[in-house]
Image (tube, rainbow, N blue to C red):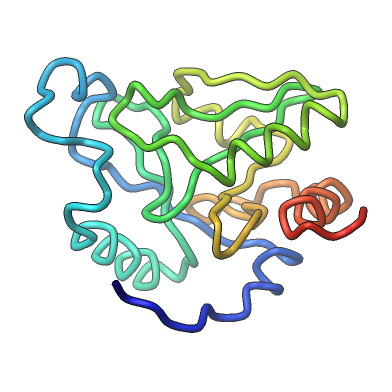
Length: 173
């Protein structure tokens, strides 16, 4: 067991984060075609995840969104990606060798209560640039709105982000 005090992520939750997309090095269907590779088992090694975060910092970004080698959105090194397009909230399917996110599940509960349609989908990389809002969510940072992808600015829905984080942090809206 390793434990430490988490950094203060309040700025990331309010002003957003800049992300870069990085090729994870396998196709989106690797969990089905090559189950022995143990994709999605983040407990085995964080070496790739730490290296990806160093690469993000080298590119003047705060975090990473992994993409499959055939062009589908996956997850962050320690987070789950959520996209909003209109009244639809989507996240990448977990049959792509990624883990189901507990914070993402809580976020979906919030969005459904707010009247949004939620779904797990196979999401092409291009969807990230076309979305109305995007977040990387995790149990430590909560919901950090994505304000730039590979240097291109994205819209941040500050009001919805605030309500989402209040829900995730257990505060009244």
